[in-house]
Image 1 (cartoon, rainbow, N blue to C red):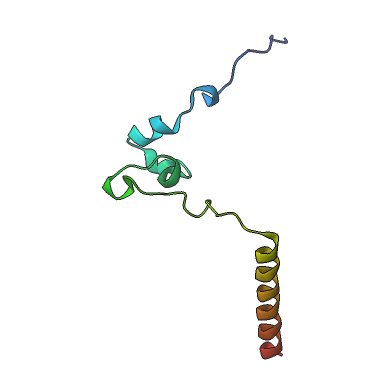
Image 2 (cartoon, rainbow, N blue to C red):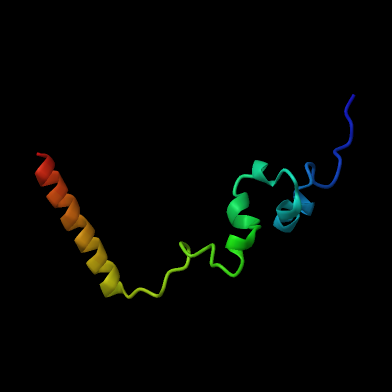
Length: 81
């Protein structure tokens, strides 16, 4: 009635590689394929992850940015009312 539990991972999770997805004919079916498995000339030598890279930001710069955002939100709220 009870079978022993099979070892290993099912679904091939351990063998998954984005480099294999880049060469797969059905690569469009993978969520995130355009970023994690880039193919084509337009992606060659490009920084696809530019939105994740952020230069160092001092605490004063961060506080100034927060102040500007709050000020803009307050102006938008006042205009809406």
